[in-house]
Length: 330
Image 1 (tube, rainbow, N blue to C red):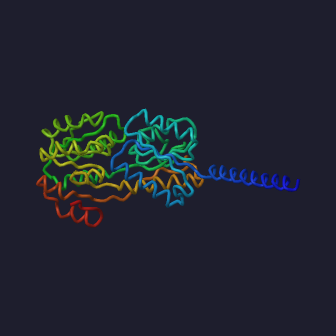
Image 2: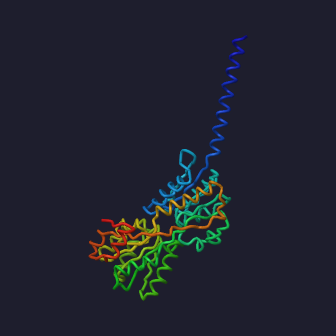
Image 3: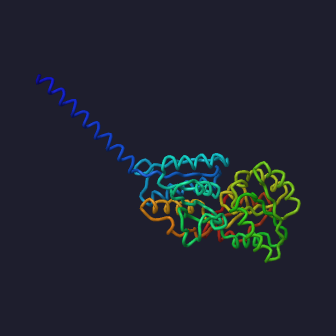
């Protein structure tokens, strides 16, 4: 009898410990916040933003696997994937979601519920109808505006190519951010007497044909912050390099891929700021009251190899600017 009682007591103790352990495990899981990160597609600029987000979250004290769960999804440019992945975050009751590039943020914004959405690099949050104002977003969405220094980019182009008169701009017609940057570039360029010729695409499949048409009519090409063009930048450069037409992209990653030069804000720095804002929301801040922010410093980036292949001499003033604050890609 004593042995039986001892066995029962031991069994009861074991079950109690197991129950308490399971409860503690579930409570720990509940306490660990989930951040859903949705990236529109893969290309170096957006990948840099993603890496910056992880660093920004770390800056706010959130480390994946320690006190944070991250669910990263990449839609690979597929609209149906954007919707299903946004729904996934909603179903798993993510604490905060982050969209990398405008289409991802718009998809998260259209998902029902009140899960906060942090914008990672959206050029025109107002035009995309994501926030009521930059200072007072007023809803579940806030984050980082991808505000490239377009006036400085134009000035750089004119400093390198002072005799250029006809400038082609290639962008995706359905990309709100890209279209917004094109309109601003055109307004600024035409004010200086330049002729701006737009060339729109709907997918990467259009780039080769459009590029072949464009190179016979322009002396330089400007590429706004455009995910589709960035994904097919090699195709664009193949056509422009053959015709000795320089490409001035908005993003430094496209200069690294073979573009001539740019003045831009760092994609990585935008990611850091995005991650920090997500961390602030995890700490309890209300997204409706968090102003939209942007990276205000920029750098000059030159591709020396591209300049050599295009027989273009980069002015010393531009080289010095890149040496002081920026990079020279050799």
